[in-house]
Image (cartoon, rainbow, N blue to C red):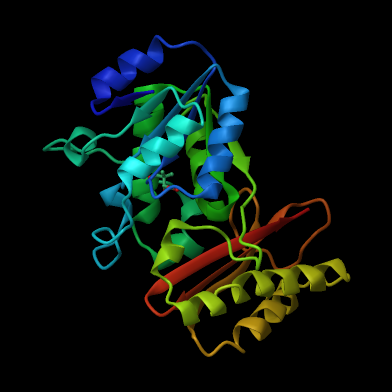
Length: 280
Ligand code: PAF
């Protein structure tokens, strides 16, 4: 496995590597969710590349950039064990050199939910992913459905800018109690960890109401709010949203055959938990 720190060297190695090349972009602190992407990318491609870069531009001024979990040595060992060929680990100035001043600004797909709660977040994500796609030119790139709006933003950018990457979405990996795996789960205290599965229970309650025939988005959302409202350690429910699965625009009625995403974001202590399920 080659560990590469510069854009020039990463381009040189990836452009001359056997094709197809699959890329798994990450911010490190790898868990089973990331590894499911790596394993799928390994199976699908001749060359497997990953990136580990805690992207400063997708964090707001009061967010957790400084304390975001970092475990580079362990991450490299895990990637090596999965048969990764190339790992891109650039220092920040390599990605954002002095004078960097060009951004990818996603449109309406990035306006609601995480976009509203975290202004500028998706501009940072879209910009860094566009840069990774340009530096590495992958045939396929792999992302987890856990960050469902992020996937929609990346798909739209990839289409609108003709980047030509096959964007592959992989299912959310969960703990046995339903909590979606996330690097940020490491911040939860033990009490908060006990509360956290309520997010998935709320999504399941909403899904259950839908399965039983309810199509009014407001009533489906209420089923999720009822579960979340019983949890004293949930300090705030940022949103329970039902949106079109491609455009991320809110829907009032769930129409059969038109995929929607039911998404939740809550704050538990200092931790923000997000999760979603998709429905046909
Ligand atoms: O999902 C992540 O880990 C990040 O948002 C990504 C896609 C690697 C961009 O920094």
